[in-house]
Length: 148
Image (cartoon, rainbow, N blue to C red; front, side):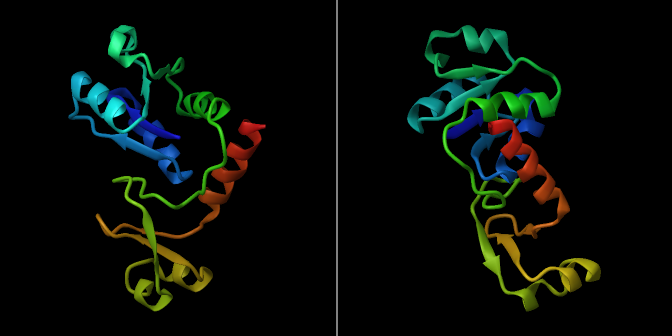
């Protein structure tokens, strides 16, 4: 399932991306553009905006009830079909991640990280580097529990 998040849900968008969901998010996008993109790209609108949720063209939406990102994530995951693939999308720009040869990561990650991890990923668009640290494991375990 693909999503598009409104301006109020940046932290939720980042968490969903880390879990592998395709989430468009740009705080500069106004409601009309958000609706247009959701229709053209078959994306579910995630919103906290009651006025946006009430618009007829925005009928394909999930109104997020909570201000707390953990509760927001739980709400989205409880209604999302299928499994996600954690650490497959950039949390910053949503682009797919690609494998990075370990030796190329040596000078761009902290020494401790390089010594303790074998696999690294890089975003081809923004260049951000990722690895499967404890935060990814905890988030994946938490998400798995919430989807049950």
